[in-house]
Image (cartoon, protein in one colour):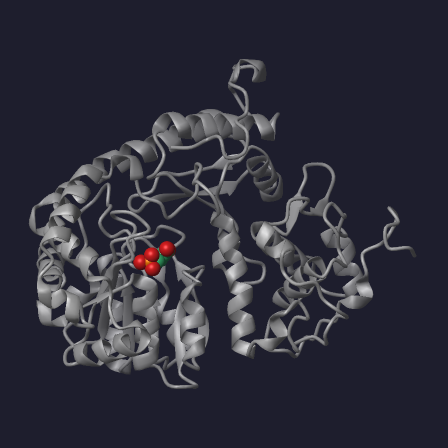
Length: 522
Ligand SMILES: Cc1ncc(COP(=O)(O)O)c(C=O)c1O
């Protein structure tokens, strides 16, 4: 059949799935369809088979195909259009289109012929992971997650402190900076963590990092041996997975129950991991806060089994109801917890500064690992941040953001209730900077297609799920968006979904026009 024929069919022969391979079928399918798109064998706008059709042809479950399609949709390769099936995106991310064109398709598992075959096997996995980053290109629009209220950040204070420091940076900071971090910043962080998060530490235990992601990378290098098992929440913060796999670990998904990581279920089915990763303050992405009893159960298990617990205190600063819970690290009596946190979510995302609290006696080893990785964090930013904390600006900013975020969350929950009830359920969250939306009266595909059509951003939970089928739901960030822009986004989304509004009299014509993609900004 000629290449450009409109009746050209999706080339099923190019798909070769292997049930015995290490990667599950949905990942194999995702990778092969992605490769077909990159190599031009599937072209922009071309329709892909229905999930039912492809599942039938390949003799696999429909959920497996749906899961692969979901991920390709969230990466921007496929677009689901209401009523007309799923097609290859017409606007593939520019970076992908610029990828070198390929020759014949390689054998599965040999690596892409899209220029990636020169990478190591691990390198190809990393490159494939990089494509997920396409979710967050350009200026953020409601409801892209992970972004704090940039409009409420005290920039004048930060600029003033930076200008002052620039003039008076101590001479020794020009020569060399400790890999463990600038000492006054380590002291400021220890003071803050002790007073506000119930962490037991001194400045000697603090390691300044380039953020949680780097902290996890250093932890994997120092504490994991090839063949070790690592527990990871499912769904969970999957970005940590490559760091552990690069250290040779086998990452095991552990289910959650209403209290977070289900310790006894995991212990029964997957005993003796070397490390368990948890985000107890506000589980990413479900938002579950781990109650005290589960925290104690986890610590007692770690003590018995000699495993490490990696506590990612993601968004631990933002709690809107109930009593604050002490960090796991503060409850731990046997030195099994490594605590890590970040300034990128509390202050601004490009500030690549975070911290970890090393277990007793291990701080120097972390300093050595940091030296070998990239020496140290920039001294000027470290010094400015120390001044920001010491001057009381940090504590004030967190207090103010707690109030602001509660308001912003309320605006999203209320407008979702007013505009999308009947299609989407968005319950309030007690902590964090995001909400989880679940499809109720419409399919998640239709809800995602409607959002993408009007420039409303989200992260599908499938991006953070290794299960088959992946966990459902959409992650909606709210911290960055003033109530009015959230409301406008909800209205546009509801209008694009059409006909799903239940019990609301406002005719569609009375709604404001849908913003153009990229127009809804903070
Ligand atoms: C649970 C969780 N931990 C850590 C991070 C990353 O932190 P950092 O920006 O400090 O690397 C994120 C997202 O960015 C996250 O969702």
